[in-house]
Image 1: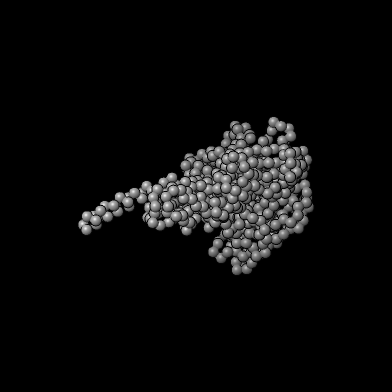
Image 2 (image 1 turned 120 degrees about the vertical axis):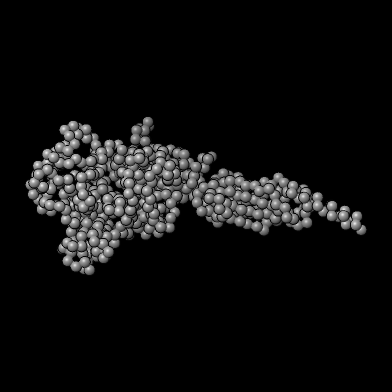
Amino acid sequence: MKKTWLSLFLCACPAGAAYAGNLTGHVISVVDAGGNIRATYSNSETITLRQQVNNAVQGTGMINFTFRIFNPGGVEAFTHTGNAAPGTPGLSQTQLSGVAVSRFYSTPGQYTFRGEASLDGETSAPTGVNFTISSPNITLIYPPSGAAGLADTPLIFRWVGSGASQYRITVAENAGLYNPVHQSINSGETLFSYPQNPSNPREQLVPQQVYYWKVEGLDAAGNTISESNVYNFSLRNQASSQSRNVSVTGLELAAPLLDRTEPLNFKATIYNSGSSAETNIGLRMSLGGISAQDSPKQIQTLTSGERKEVSFTAFMPSDQETSLAVACVDIFDDNLADNCKTKLIAKDSGGPPASGGPSKKLSYDELWAELTKRLGPDALKALEGYTFQTIECGNCSGSELNDLLAALISGDATLTGASISETGGAAAAPSAQTGRGTAETAGAEEAPGMDLEIIKPSALQDEWTGYAAAFSEKEASTFVVTGKKEWKKLWQSLSGAELPDVDFPEKMVLGIVSASRDRAETIRILSRRRTEEGLMVDYYFIQASKEKEIPAAAYILKVVGREAGKVNFRRLDIGAK
């Protein structure tokens, strides 16, 4: 009896250990509805997951299969159990058919299918296969559909990608894109710069001709896996005087502020300096970051050369000593810089904060004369072909600099004019012209020097805007990039284009990103000003209409001079539709 029991015990041990190698040759695959193995699938189709394994022994139970899919971030997004095969020796196969990609899809990228087989407590060696999923939808961003009179040089096409490894851009003279004038395939970037001097004369875009464009996503084999709608655009006739420019030329209080608890009546003036009439223009106004009660307002028609005044009513926030009033037109014209007008309102008077003593506004020629006095006789020649970006007054006190910045923000002063306060001797530090009382200017022979930051015209490409699926914050976010490493990481998440060069010892990059609930069509930085707490950046969102689809979070990146102190961001509540 002992021998029999011992014999059974010895036989049981090797049998259990042998299971470790009984399930071999585990093969898995992902195929499409037609049974074909592909490297890339779209998020709108179904797939079939297959497994096969070789069993070397007769099992007591069933061979159970597990199906798992992991997303590009390595997180398990899909699990299925329940498929089984008899535990008999030989090849066992199973498949899970009709799996909708939408069940586990979250973002374009590389997914991993991992299969497992188990028999009587033994699990096969893990095995996996990678496959790519792209979105079938490509959203065109620029030029927007119906854009007319474009003057971009070069013309850069932009879109929200689908995750495809390549994109084919087609431009044609007909909506069917038959016999296109240009077609190009890139390496996965979501932008394309149209050639300015194409070798084929037919590819040269003709002004006022309506063109149609479309983007298709391609897999590595060149098969179309996603596509966009067809948009159209036209170029401006450079030889003609046709232009579009609607500006906000004035923003004033109808009466002084006497009681801060009472509503303020504002008057905004808009002017059409373009060569053609504009229709359905939206005008928006806010005070202290809060929309006016009757904002926005719609201007049905504004003919060429016509000027209109529009009234708004707004309350001054109780927690603000000074509030920034902002009026903006929503229009895609040739000069976005004058689409807004601002004015700083103080509680004591309802006007901009007072600045120093009387001053005299200088003409353009007088301004240049004063600048060359401070910079030397050779400065004017050296400045040819350059553009002023900022003027810094190192000799100004904090209050003087604040007054200058307040006047610039309010719109009562611009960088094309200046004033010099009367001091009875040497000229005072340069100040912004505010339009108040005037007096004759005193001598300026011993004026303190001006620090001018001078930028070449070719170097003014220091701002980038667009949409990015890389941003998915629930709340709007702001950030400052101060180093090349983090700049490179950020840029690679947004674009496949070459990394723009930023002189980080001298510069930094301001970043603002909208949240999905903001429905931001674009983001604008209104002003940058120095305060006692550091640099203050005022910005606002232009929201899309309800019927417009927003493909992803909107962002803006802006290169500015390096600041040693803290950078604060303030969102202004304007532009909501």
